[in-house]
Length: 82
Image (tube, rainbow, N blue to C red):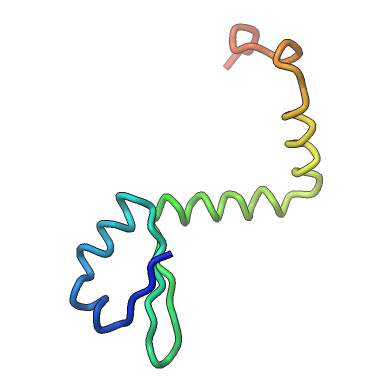
């Protein structure tokens, strides 16, 4: 995580946001009133999806069970009608 004070953030906002978007850097902006965290939209969406999945009852167990299933027991795309 990159940490920057508000003065330097104002001076370099474009380059900091560009780094955040291109390299998925998370930025902590420090101010007298408190701190803020900036992340790319892709990272934010991934975080929200993870939180959503974690909120579904038994989802973790289902995922772990799926990870333990041998590939030979999985259904191939050829056998699925979309």
